[in-house]
Length: 226
Ligand SMILES: *[C@@H]1O[C@H](CO)[C@@H](O)[C@H](O)[C@H]1NC(C)=O
Ligand SMILES: [Cu+2]
Image (cartoon, rainbow, N blue to C red):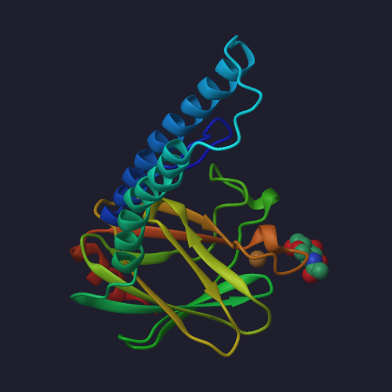
């Protein structure tokens, strides 16, 4: 979970988020190398005695500083595209859960089973009981860990965005349109997210909360759901 001192990504809870963090680090290394090189060149221009005021062109150096950045960009573009298409993959889906954005809460439907449906409202500050402010909800999304889950995401009024950073998911919830995403949470735990599209006055108060549990407990939960 992110706290006030966390300036980086949250720890990943899914293989895809792991890949996203690897890609972020990879790109950052390249950016740092470019920044250092550019600063080195700028500073050495300032403190250099050998200046030729009549230099108009240098075709070889121009060729190098045109082609070299293009080659560097390929090393960023290829992993980026790979990740983009990996994100859209849907394999071995176990269940489908639908999440509908409303002003200002999410409603959840498990249509694979005996029509499990509920609304997921934030817990108000005065009702908090040792839980997390602006992140806790009354009804969590329960999922079995180590399985591919499909989310279908839409909205009823305005655009919302269904986001859970630790599993690397962010999907717009558009009215009249059904978006899908799949994720795989590889450990038990509770994962938080918040609506990520400004959707009105209480946009900040419609968090998303996923509880990842074992398959045995999940089946128990389904069976005992009333
Ligand atoms: C936003 O939520 C608060 C607290 O639940 C509520 O008092 C307020 O009326 C809501 N605002 C709107 C515009 O509905
Ligand atoms: Cu919102």
